Image (cartoon, rainbow, N blue to C red; front, top):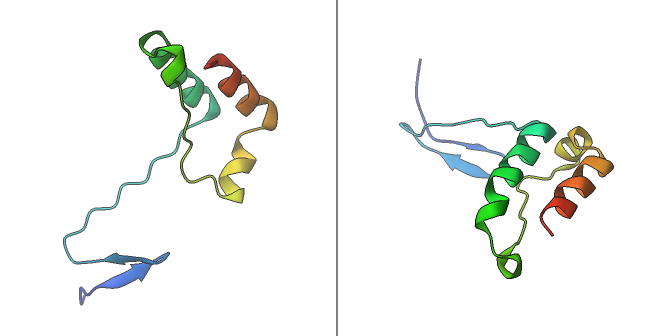
Length: 73
């Protein structure tokens, strides 16, 4: 099998690159927020959710995201 460079969703992949796929369920996202909350001063609490494509947003109900954001206020 020949190994060569290729593009995947606009990213250049080269021989030797390692891909890691991660997926978090809404309960895991909330557990991470609960773990961090005691260590964050209220003035520094910012939330960044990565890769919120339409497909990924469908996995997180609107109410679930609201609870997550409200818990970090």
